[in-house]
Length: 243
Image (tube, rainbow, N blue to C red; front, side, top):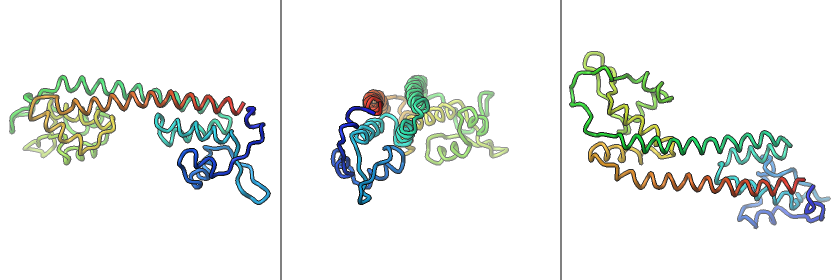
């Protein structure tokens, strides 16, 4: 173990909690979840912690902003169980997701550049060979048909109905709106924020309404990337403490 652990320093739950503005119950919960190593018990049955536990807590709290609670928990649990490769795999997956999110953002920006509100066909026009139906479109986007119906109710997508069959028909403009909604949802935007953006762009023919959202998205991705660096530094410090 690290030299700090050998120093014999003992910490109470309140000592760990106060340093990070947490409750003592949170400290106990973290231990039960495997985020902290199991604590020793005093002669009276009270939990006692060490600088090793403090380092584990710092690592977990530093990993949270970049990786999220479930992944940060899984990383610390893996480390505490000695499964370092599993912990590293989880970190790799988070970095891969961040890269995928950056690619998604670029795809959104590309889709917006191609968005042409004037291309929507006139009401009652005949289907053309480029039209599609709900099943194939859902499969192409990797979502369920029920999701497309939900987006339609929220005003994100406006398919027309085939007058003979009553089936939803998605023309080029509706497919583009569905792609845009899908990409923004992946970026973490709720439906009530996406709907007015899509409607405004569709009606006004401009991308200005999305500029602030895209700037915010860029900022959040950058913040996640930087948080991952901070988390990696604290995790490395914890690994050194473990020895």
